[in-house]
Image (cartoon, rainbow, N blue to C red; front, side):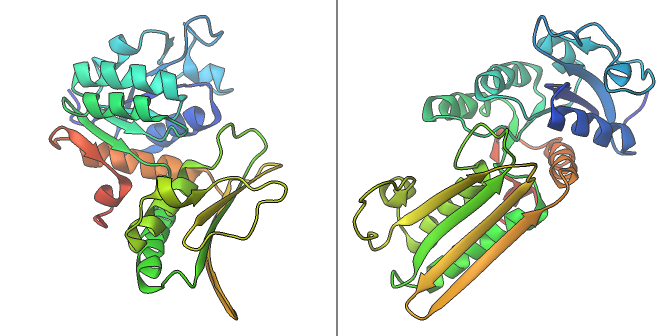
Length: 270
């Protein structure tokens, strides 16, 4: 019997789902335990290799996450908030590492994720890339070094089909800026400006979301004062940076005690 960890991928038909499947199949450090899709999806019951336009790989798409999780050491999840919450309960029952790249979750959903993390290792991040997580650290440090004479704006751009705004990464960056200043993000965030808004409030952290085309992901953190600006930037040109990071997180989580972790923990930057 192989000692290679078995990884489950949920949301198999999605763009990230297919990329994650390919990432695991190409890896020498992990094996594909199974994949899932929602009940009634036309991929269910079919070989996922042929569904993705290739040869059969001997893994059929299932609509029973618990059955798949039971034979997996880790689950990678880039789906939707409600589905991710359901998966968190099932992954905890299976004592499988749950790697969550899903964004747009509300407070109640995050509380449920935290409850599941009392029974299993959960790695959750708004962005799985090494570069973005370094940017988070830099944002925190720069915000801590500068006073409120520097206005902070987080500007993000994504493809036309992204459904949540600001992006999870933008919120990570805003949180890092708030942490650097010793502020509560909920109290200083300015997420929307339209019409006669008045002057910018001192100490606010602004967010701007751009949607269009096939943009993979672009994030700027702007520190603007009279006479100068500092711009920290990350540009993603290949979504594989996210699947590589997610697999790294899944392997890192094996054997870790129950709890909530981030990519900063995975990368040793926390």
